[in-house]
Image (cartoon, rainbow, N blue to C red):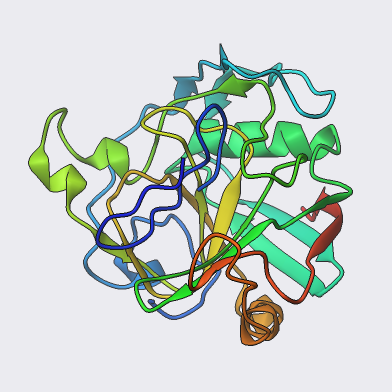
Length: 249
């Protein structure tokens, strides 16, 4: 379901998933030097966290299994990833410390080549929401890996029931975040912010796109959207086919 509020939300469609500070590779995301001021401070995490991946209501749209590793460290080197697309390469740095279970799932999907041969099915161009959304093998905005997991940063920086958790914050240029169909329904769909966007802190930030790759996003954005979901929301006119996503560590 595509939710409309102050800005069109980065949600997945019902039953699955749809969904700026200076561009930089510095992480964790909660460090102001990384993404500018205005972000909540991340809650302290243990050196190892237990990740839970539950079955989703919809089966996987491409053969894949849940992450084998569920005890995940929050320390150590950050994870580097390269996504090769028909529009150009996109290099990303994943924030293990802030969103370890999200990064663990993303890397498991990469290792299983879940994203290979898929396309980025959605782009938005409104003033309050400028993102490219990918990660759905079905290309419909409803696809996923057959499992789901809880939100992490910045959602977990707010106490349970805190009304501030529903107030939009800046998802800044270069941020990599998860799309979802509601709280704790993260799966495989993700979005890249190519222009500062305003969203409630209910979409897990788990990395940043390297500054050198933002030109690829700018080229895609300049092509516009086909408005198939409404004005400023649809498929990118410049097709974005993902050939492969690989670890670059």
